[in-house]
Image (tube, rainbow, N blue to C red; front, side, top):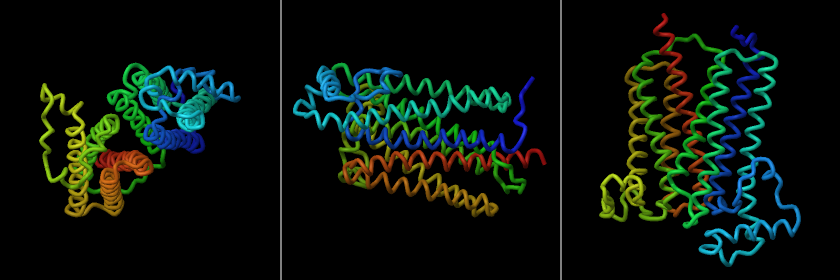
Length: 352
């Protein structure tokens, strides 16, 4: 028999659970950005899900951790003059990032178990929770798989694995937001002409998803440190290095100039689509709610575009790089909320 979510209090508790997940993912993303931009991600050279929660507590423990770090390429190729004090700083960011990941797991599992025992989850919510559990487990494994790529010969993580790790984080965040919104009290006010705007919203989310991947490629290849001018790339709209790799398609994956160029092009497309959505909302005389949400989407897109430009021209300072990444996650939340709103409106029109 399917267990039903019986009352508003249960719905609000489950909704708060989803929102807490989205909030923690956002915080972890910020710390992850700091970890990456400060070169801290390879400071912890092993993966111990249980014992790894205990940091070095004595000077002997710190020296042991530092000696372990010295065995890997990042130390003897990049940081051979690093002091123990400097090592403690990079260790702190990676340790904090991992501990927040563990905290997210506990914040998910403990309420999940309680909801199951008290039979507060219906079949739909149970299935959704299991999906999040599966993706969250995959994310933990992907994080370590990513770190491993930087512990071999070249002290830099694979930009493919970095992209996968980042993209999964965005997926978890988006699902948490969607699931939380689904538990909101539905407003019955009709939404005008949501069909076409819904389609444009989905297209925008697809483009943003692709942009997240290229943002990770840009970060992983350090492509943000070349051609630091805007709108042209040192006077070029299409720099001469765009197609130097063979076969041609490899430029889109491994050529830092092409990757940065793609990041610019996709970002511009996202900006144009968001502006068109706002224009269309005016043309069809969308209702106040739809107009407000469309304006919010367009403003969030253009704000993120501006942050990206400044991040580039100032050669990716840590604070701007982190700001850019965090704003991207919030943008996804805004667009997911927009699609959710229009999806409900579309459903209302179809059932009327």
